[in-house]
Image (tube, rainbow, N blue to C red; front, side):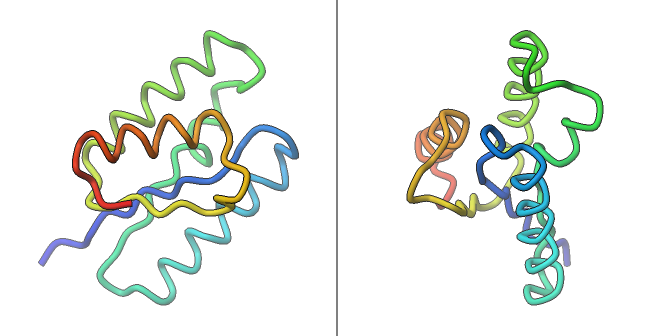
Length: 101
């Protein structure tokens, strides 16, 4: 049985390093407590080689994240009280595609 892919949606901009650490924590919690799920957090992976402060690289990273989102079963949004521009775009995309948020 394949595992459910959970897209982790949380802020990146602002306190950049802290927000990446937070996303890592969210992924760790999914791995630890949801045995049939795999977390997908593009802003952990893509920030290793794309710079969010470079608008072209940010655009590439956002587009790649949306491609991954299309393959996911659900989107889990964290820190939703103040969603970033990127979070809002991901949530809207998920809703348009019928991916549970």
